[in-house]
Image 1 (spheres, rainbow, N blue to C red):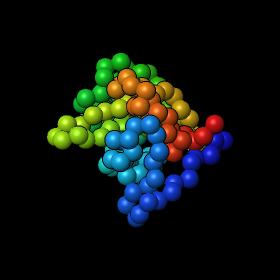
Image 2 (cartoon, rainbow, N blue to C red):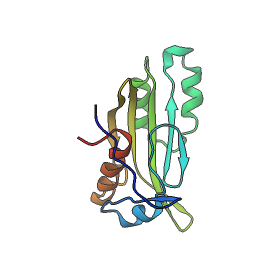
Image 3 (tube, rainbow, N blue to C red):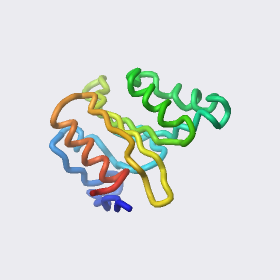
Image 4 (cartoon, helix red, strand yellow):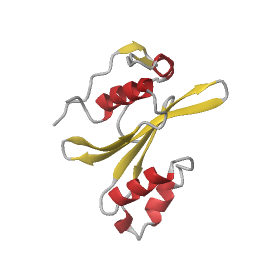
Length: 141
């Protein structure tokens, strides 16, 4: 079992987040596993297809309108029989939302299993931010 990184708080509303992506570090408030609609993190459970012939899964995926097609297809493949949690990490600059990447995990009896990670921003800074986020949602190696 991997141990999740312990959060350190700067104040009651902001955790200490240290990656090479300084803009994201300032923007993110808190990284947590499970369903989160927060400043810098959106994450939701995706229910399995076999539960009700995909009706619940279709409902879950409609919240991800901007999700790249190849990621959506992978998520559908991974959630045929078991649920998963899809994460999007992002920040705002002006009126524009910048997505740095997505992470897909599966809940287990002892924590969370990493299924895949996509650095959609394609930079080393965003890779560093995603690696740091994963310490809080799937644990450290």
